[in-house]
Image (cartoon, rainbow, N blue to C red; front, side, top):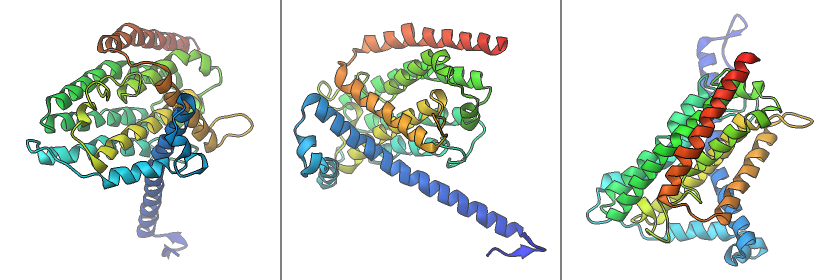
Length: 331
């Protein structure tokens, strides 16, 4: 029981209750942050195994290859941690954490249901998009600190790709923000209507494609290109540090899928009943699409990447923004 004064809780009791609630919310987000990317990784193993007839992920551990993810974790844990002799050791060690942490911070502000959010922020869309852009600094640090020209080349390519696709990514998000008249995620979901699926469809496609390009997911993985330039900015990384970069990629997929479902697909709104399960279900379908695209399309060249961004996605995003403005004013 909290202490009371004339039947009402004291100021100190209120502060303690708020701190405990905030800590509980952060703990739940942290558990989700550690769990959901691993589930996406397991999904990728299984989907690729079915689509490409990969033997390992189908049989590792017996029943339907359940142990493949465990085997990968043990493999990374057993690998020797190597730091190149000429590397900047401090920056080299900090880079994986700086690539991963922004996704955790961004996930705190994304709701999956009514009042199911780590921290409600009035300008939540602005906050999340800004924080997501910080992760590329970790990649640039990794490439520069590795003392390897191929790592640096991969890092510079990744930064240039982010600069090209950040503009359509933000413009597409601005379209739905304009339609809802708010930067808050909850307000956007509350304002969402089923006909927005058609009205905001171009913005949703641009947002999702640009997000994949920012995450360097196939077919936009030219900066990493493991078959051509080894593994881009992560060439010199081994063991758990390398695993953190992979975890950051899967965390980015989770974040992108949640953002797309909340901004463009109505979040927790669904047939029969509104529940947070709809948000998770929509994000899971989008995660399947991410893997599906990986096994279906070849890698784009550097010039094709830039052409797609500047000549296709940005004009479409600008046209959609104009349409949204006209419809919003007319409505």
